[in-house]
Image 1 (cartoon, rainbow, N blue to C red):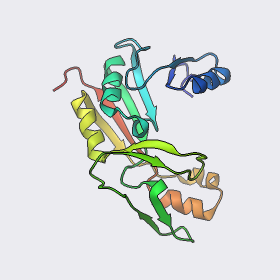
Image 2 (image 1 turned 120 degrees about the horizontal axis):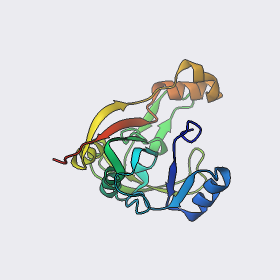
Image 3 (image 1 turned 30 degrees about the horizontal axis):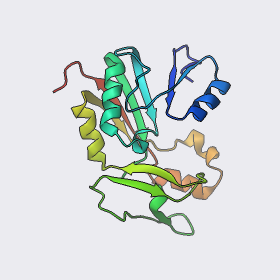
Length: 192
């Protein structure tokens, strides 16, 4: 979408196979094999906007990733991060038959960081690795790494998209539970 609007886009993924797939679908975009915790292929101060869509909960090095984002952004550049709310782990939830009641649970303290391996659920077909961090850890990392939090949101489905859910049960799910949280960050010139 950014490419269609005239932006010069750089796509990053650690997986060579994912980059190969991306290049085949959008050859006009610069896709690079790189770690989001390093961004070695991106020059210092060279980009206006970084978007990390469902990335931060899957990286083992949150601090490194946010420092790398800060490094590659231009003065007063922005980062937008979207990830699953750590308070409501969908893969560790029990949902009633009618879909109206949900119980979330952690086999560990919510306030502790934890490396997690979840069994397949939803659209996932194999086990997957992710890292639980309390929401305050994300916020503190953003600030410590030189960002100002400009906006924070828990997006909710809008009426014009109700038809995309496919069922009353899924619509209820998206209307009553936070599935994402989003931060808009601005690079501060001086890190406190």
